[in-house]
Image (cartoon, rainbow, N blue to C red; front, side, top):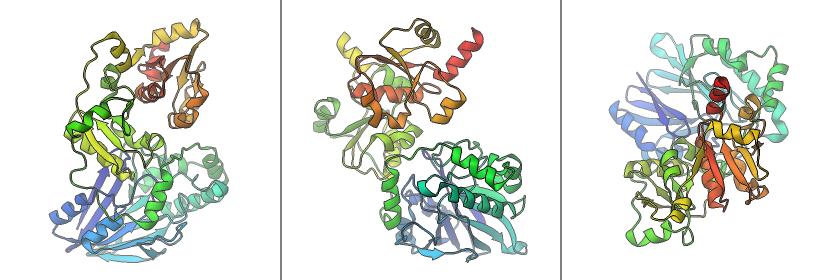
Length: 458
C-alpha cells in the first residue's frame, strides 16, 4: 500500500496518488501528468481511477489528459454548476476499491456546490479510516472560501459549516490531506504545513472556533477574497476538459531574428514578462516588461495577461524559463513565444533611467510623510485584509490585481512610491506602472516589514 503527494509550485496545489496491488487512484491531478505516470511506474501499478474533489478555479485540471494516457475512469461530484462533460457523477457514499484501499465519497458542499471529500479506508486494518482528502473544504488552519456564488453567499457558508461538522465527526486521528497549501488564492491564513489531523483542526482552525452556525456564516460573509479574471477561463476549461498535458519542454530561446522586436517596447509583438528576481529587475530590465518572478507569476499573472496576446519571458536560465512557462500553461496561457536571457547594461544616463527602478528606504518614506510634497503619493497594493490589519494611514490603497483596470485613476504627473508587505508586490506594481507611461515611481524596499521595524526603532 502506498501514498504519494505531488505539490505544484506557484499555486500551492496538492494532488495525490494512492494505491496498492497494481492499481492506483489520482486525486485532483494537474496538467503535469508526467509526475503521476512516473510515480505509478515506481510503484509498478496502473492508474485506474481519477477523482476530482470539485471544479477548480485557479488551474486547468489534468484529469482528461491523464485519463487519455492511462484509460482511467474520471469521477466528479454530482452538483456541478454545469455538467462536467468528461466525468462520471459520484455521490455521497460511493465507494471505489483500489487494491487494499477503499475510497469513500463524502458530499461536502460549501466551497462549491459539487465539492466532495474522499475518505481513505485501510481494508487490512479492519476497515479503519486513515485519512481524508478534503479538496478545498478544509485546509491546514483555514477553511474554504464561499464567495464564488455572489447571490448565495449565506447559503454556501451555511453548507460549508455543515460539511465541516461532517468531517469533524470522522474522528480526531484522521489525517487531513487538502488540495491547496499556504500561498494559494483558495484561502488566506493557511499554515505552511501540508497535512494535519481532524483533531488538530478542531482545536486550532478558526473555522472550527465559531460558537454557532450563525457565527460561522457571519465570519464568512465578512471575508474579502479576489476573483482573478482568468478564473472564468479555468471554469470553462474544467467543464469540457483539456486533453493535452504540459509538454516536456515548454520553452525555448527566442530565435535570433525575433530578438530585436521583443527587446524594443515600441515594436514588441506581445507581453514581455521578466521572471528574474525583483532585485535584478530593479537593477536593470527591458523597458515595458512586467516583473512576475516565482509564485507571483501564478498569483498575479491572471490579472495582467490575456489569452490572445503572445508572451515572451526574460529569465536567468532555460530551467527558470521552462518552469515559468509551465506555470502559465497550467493557467491556460499557451501562446508562449520563447525566452531571452541577456539584459544589456545601459550605456547612457537616459537608458539607465529607462531600465532602472528607483527604490527608497523607511527613513526616506518617513521624511516624505512628515513633509509631503503636493505631487507625491504613497500607493499601497496589498490585499484588503492586510491593509485592515496594518494600515499605512497616509497611503492610497489599490489592490495589485486591480491596477490594470484602476491605473487610469492615477495621475501620471505625480510621483508614486509603491508599498506592499515586503517590497515584492510593490516592484510588480512599479513595473506595470512604468510600462503604462508613469515616469516617476519608486519602490519602498521592505515596505510594511521595514516600516514596522523603523517605527519600533524610532
